[in-house]
Image 1: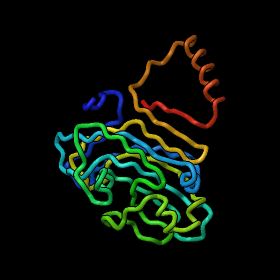
Image 2 (image 1 turned 180 degrees about the horizontal axis):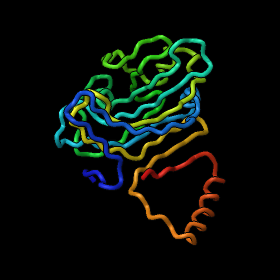
Image 3 (image 1 turned 90 degrees about the vertical axis):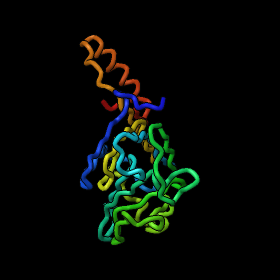
Image 4 (image 1 turned 135 degrees about the vertical axis):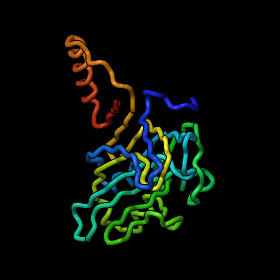
Length: 221
């Protein structure tokens, strides 16, 4: 539908202060940057409400943070940021107002989807850098060279950053895949704690799921 589910999506809001921001992230080991380039992708669904909107170009972004434990270069940590304003169909790499009051789905591959970064290997942050700061993750890998390939993807997050006032954003169905790692986050209402007998059957079922391998689907309450 064109309205966000009241208990089935992550809700993020910012006020009228430039310092306001809202973000949720998961810290884990999501494989290497090279794994992502070989067999990887990101996806999420987002909804931008028009109610109280003070920045037509703002919307919920998706981010991946990497840390290179194996480099001798300075500044071995960065966050790559995908913003919908730079990724509107037919207007990629041109900042555009983001459509409101509808769910939009983003499917991002190493070669499709533009990101800026917060600084890496002595290179400055590209925040606010405009069209020249936006590249695909494959293009950033070419820019930084082989050193980045064994960097660990340590965090995935979604949110609305600072200088994005008056936002009401919803996010759901967040997915990351990198090599053999695949994670899916589905935001739903909390469920009732089962009775002990029911819990026994649940544990048995979960053991069967674990046997299927590394691919996991997480329902986030």
